[in-house]
Image (tube, rainbow, N blue to C red):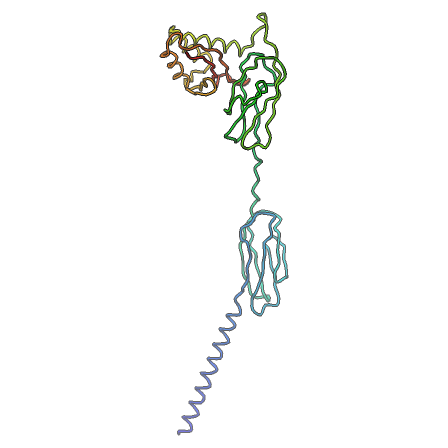
Length: 292
């Protein structure tokens, strides 16, 4: 009886050992079925390579599928996607293990061309005429030399200047963004004789000048103010007024200031209008005045 019992115990011990060995084998097989691989980067610009590599234990055969029909049987390498989009990369190891990676191929960023500093000004003007010179560009510091005095004549982005003598002048504009000055050439023509016909802009500017001086001289405010407002500014009282290339006001406040100043306190020397050929309304008034 005891021999029979010992025999059964022996069989149970063997069965337990076999079971433990089976569990260990199954676990080892499950561990070996895990793919250890990487794809990097997962988000990249078109034209840059995507690197792929596998380090799975026991691997001896690889198939990389890049989601667009292209494949590779190498263990690792680099791949260049020919088009933008989202692609699912699939890796098959030893014909039975799979792992997938999702990558995004985006269009490269367009590099914006830097904005160059430019001079906006006429190529011809009249002797004694107030000329508007505009700087265009990202700079904050502006130094104008208009070629007549040999000095820095203005330090505003938009400057006004008149040439005393006729001739051909080289205008230089320096900024903190330019290595060398930006150059503009302007031809200053002799003044018109009295018999010459004024252009439309000059007629408008002279009309505005007369109405502003009338306000200073305490003539009816509303009549003169409304004439300029309705005839030239499209009823926009907020039109900008630049005074002596330095101070700024909206048109209404500027005219109210002239009214308060009183008679013979200010003389309007020159009015320059800012209007393009395609505009119907004056966008800006540039006033040169003498205050006593």
